[in-house]
Amino acid sequence: MFAKLLKYEWRSTKGFAWLMFLISLSAAVVGGLSLQHLMRVSQTQAQQTLLTVMVLLIFLAAMVALLVCAAANLFFTLWRFYRSRFTQEGYLTFTLPVTTHQILLSSVVNCLLGAFCALVTLAVSYIFMGLVACAGFPGFFSSRWEILEALFQSIGWLFTGENVPLFFQMVAQILISGVCEIPVIMLVITVGAVLAKKHKVVAAVAVYYGIQMAQVLITGAVGTAAGTSLLLLDASASYGWTLTFSTLLTVAVGIASYFLMYYLVKRKLNLS
Image (tube, rainbow, N blue to C red):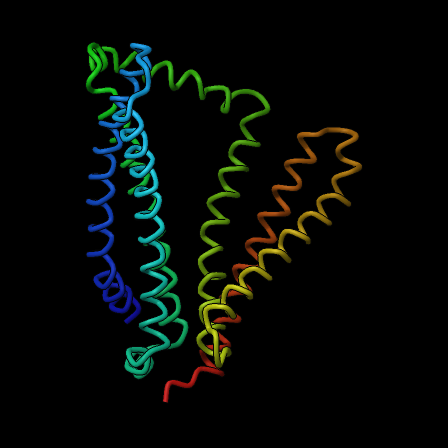
C-alpha cells in the first residue's frame, strides 16, 4: 500500500516538475544567449549601450527564473503534503487502510523526490546555459576535451592529500542536511496546520526559525567549547570535528522532527 501511496503522490507532482524543467530550459537558452552577447561585448571593449544594459537585465532575470523554478518544484511538493494531509482531501487519505507512518513516509519520500528534481533541473539548466553561451564562439566544440581536462585538473586538488577526507565529509554533511531538512519543514507545516488556530503561516515560520536558531546556537557553543583545544593542535581536525557534530545534530533534529510530526498527526489532528 505504501508503494501505491507514493505512486499517487508522485503522479500528483510530476506534471509540475516537468513544467518547471521546460521553463528552466527556456530560461537557460535566454540566459545563454544573453551571456554570449555580453561576452562578445566585453571582448570588443565596446561602450555600454542601452542594448547591453537590457541584455544584462535579461541575463539576471534568467538566473532568477532558474532559482525560482527550482524552489517552486520543492514548494509544490510541500504544498501537496499540506493539501493531501490537512484539508478535505486529508480526510479521505486518513480513511485508507494504511498506517500513519505509511502516509507520512510517502509524503517524505515524495518531497525528497521533489528536491532531487529541483537539483537536477538546476544543474542541467546551468550546464545548458553554459553550452549555449559558448556555442557562438568558434573552436569551442573542437576544443571541448581540452576544456574538460583543464576543468578536472582545476578541481583535482580536492582529491589529493589531506583534502580528501574533509571534502567527502563536507559533501556528506550537505547531503545529510538536505535530506534531514525535509522532515523539519514538514513538521513546521504540521504545527501550523494542527496546533495554530489563527495565523498558521506565521506560526510555521516562527517554529522553523526557532529550530534553526537552536541548531546554530548549540553547534556554535559545543563547537567552540570542544574545538578550542583541538585548534591549538590542528585546525583541520577542529574543523572536521565541528562538521561531524553538526551532521549528527542535523540527523537527530531530522529524526526528532519526524516522530514529533507523527505524534501530532496521530494524536492531535482533527479533520472532522
